[in-house]
Amino acid sequence: MSSPRNRLLIAMSTLTIFLLLTSLAFAAAFDATASVEPTAQYLNDTTGVVFTFTIENTGTSASIGAVEIERPSASWKVIECPLAPVGWRSQDSSTK
Image (cartoon, rainbow, N blue to C red; front, side, top):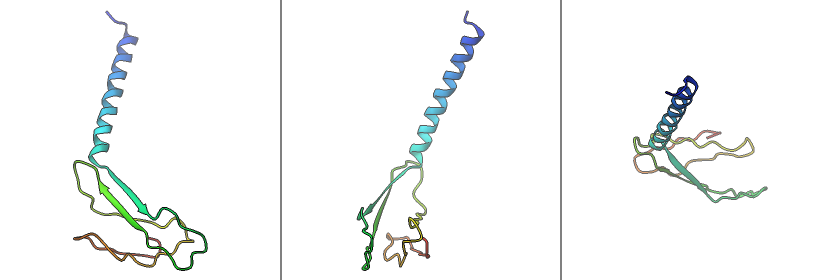
């Protein structure tokens, strides 16, 4: 017969593995990837740059309902959001 300490260790290990597997499954259910082009912005650029953001739903249980993109700092100026995917609408503010 195993000691109470060994049984406790086995129970804790089993619980840890269960929680890890559950959290991995949950994370995969709600997941997305994102990228931005261009990847560089130079100082003192007076003409400005249009950034294109690509967001892809890689989860398995739900679609993406909204995306919020915030400027990195107050030194950046948001002018407009010219395009949105079909069926979406864009809304810009001074910081997003």
